Amino acid sequence: MKKRVVIGVIVVGVLAVGGYVLVDNVTSTTADEAFTLDTVKPSGDGTVVAPAGLADFAGTWAASDSSEAGYRMNEDTTIGAQVVTARTTKVTGTAELTADALSSTKITVGLAGLTSDQSLRDTAVRSIYLKTDDFPSAIFEQSTPVSIATVPATGTPLMMSVPGNLTLKGTTKPVTAQLQAIAGNGVINIVGTVDLKLTDFGVDPPNIPGLATVKDDAMIEFKLELKRQ
Image 1: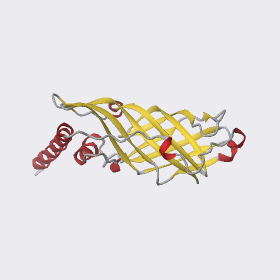
Image 2: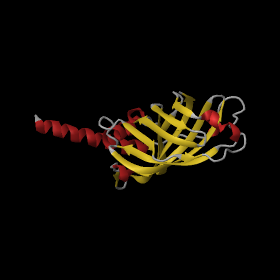
Image 3: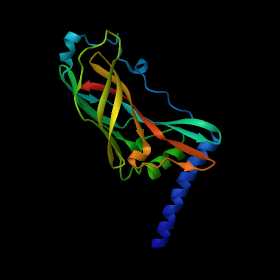
Image 4: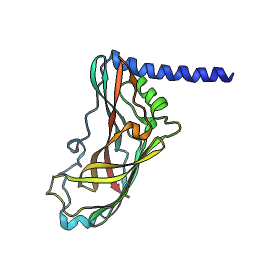
């Protein structure tokens, strides 16, 4: 019985990887567009708070149900180079602002909800590469406060580099999140990215000689709609 179970697990793994490769080699994939503030800035005039009023934003802000996150990867296949993306709305977290700094941030992304345009790819990512049953979440936690010394003119995004630690598949590594933020009408909207190497987090990129090779360099993309808690 034990041998049958082992064989069954191997077969499932082979089918999942094979499905990933098959899908990416017989169909073209359609990547999601990168998140931009053009599509998420608040309704109305999208006013950025004036420098004298920055203290008005001090406090804790929480991610709303409109927040999203996902990955962007590059792969070489028999039909050419492709960009692969997936998205999920399973995003929670908070950001703490003071009168002159982003003092702390913690964002959690539920990985089992990641969805691309190919269901076989999603099954392989969840079961083989990210093992979401064992490691259901990716977590970014800011490591040091980031000063907000000045605020851009009205309508101009605030750009920030935020150092932190990313936990993925049970491994925690230092990373830097590149953010753009704009505030108005009681909402702070943020879009950003985190660059990483998959192998740094124990994720082996799919590599089937002659069929498909996923690059080690990858990107986490996110858009956050923050509301005062």
